[in-house]
Image (cartoon, rainbow, N blue to C red; front, side):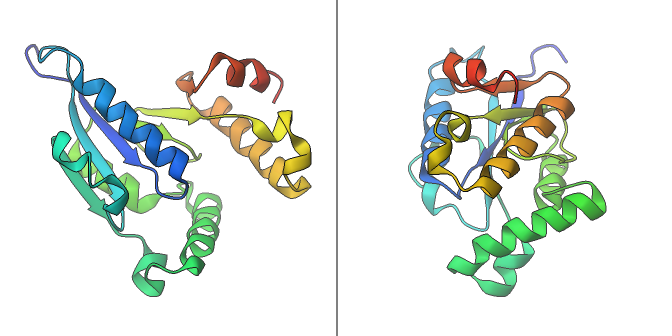
Length: 179
């Protein structure tokens, strides 16, 4: 496949503004590469693209995939709770916490997908992302059940990633050792 550019799928994180900002910055960084180095970029957004309006013109393609809770509930606060519950049930029953995203990514035939923040997912060549381990450094700011969930989630990512995990900083990596 000489001459073809790498095709990267980027997941438009929409449950927290820090994740959306991270993806914005990643897109802008990739655009600084030379034309020969720059990958094709497909941005995958769940249900809507409003958090990504300023970078949508910068990517090669945007795929907006629908999730069942949003179809039923619309864009209400309850949707986030329903999304988390659906992901938990789907992961435990079907081995994929984000089946709608998985279908959309496979259809677009990307070479890799990033940032993957949850396991298990059945994505082609996922690159997991652990942004921080604040729950370990500042446990007083997290309820015990949130700390346990994050510990299990990060351990699953480290065990199931096939060695492809990105940490946002050396500090996050250092803090995660032993999680």
